[in-house]
Length: 391
Image 1 (cartoon, rainbow, N blue to C red):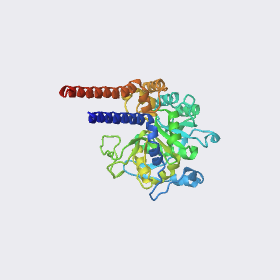
Image 2 (image 1 turned 45 degrees about the horizontal axis):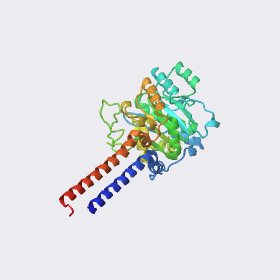
Image 3 (image 1 turned 30 degrees about the vertical axis):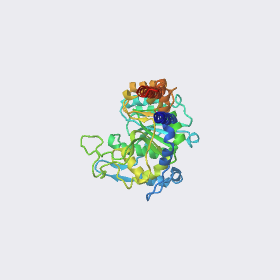
Image 4 (image 1 turned 90 degrees about the vertical axis):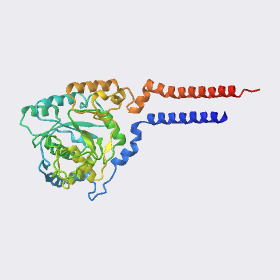
């Protein structure tokens, strides 16, 4: 009988320890668990032949900008080169010398895109209604177009960067890289968020996360893991021909709807363009250049590409960047849901623990197990008494 009691006590102790460990694992939170890994990954220095250079080095010598602008690559799908700007926003240099975050939003030249830009301006991209702990600015990135409407929009909002290039999908890598080069030369923020105009980003949450975990050589977002297959299908818009990229599988990279890059890594990425032919998939191409420079993409919590129907309240509460392909109604719906859940803990697991149902579940399971175990021991004791009655 003593053996059974010892066994019972051991089982109960193990279960209590397991439940406490499980509770602590969930309550500590996802952000804290990735702190060490994200800092290590974002501060990896290159071990390749190309040494990482800071954007400040390029700011000191304008001739190096000219050298960057002269970089060319070519394949059957794309003739890559950096392009200059036609129209640019004008920021107060004194106030933006140490700008923490520049939000670079890719948009289109058709009239329908104006509605998207206004939606961003009225929701997540509004600096006044979404104040953060550090300064940030918004810039929309467009290709070339003869349009008085764009000129008027630029004058009204001072947030339009028009590049001297034809705006189409195959040229997206030219558009993004030229926008990044402009950002480095004319603004030089600590971080750049590249985002599409059909996503939603919680800028204050993003800035808080970057303050805690972002490094000087940071590249992060929603990471596509190593081994994604290069698509050669003719009917697919993301098709990449063999002469543009000989490899059949991509290295890990951050998905295109939204990712964050430290300005300090841009010069080295740009120089690596000379070693790797540019191809139309801009996000995967950045992943290849990052690998060339020994940079591992950081998977950022709250960067979510799922459909809205798959979101629970704790997903909403912990979300930082959501999308993509949101229409205007969905953007408004997203903002409403984020406001409704804004008082919940930001960390996903802390939010779960805030749910009474989860807490009660964690209490009930050990209690039921304890009652069952006690009942089982008493039954064994009764059977033993019946089988071996005392004289």
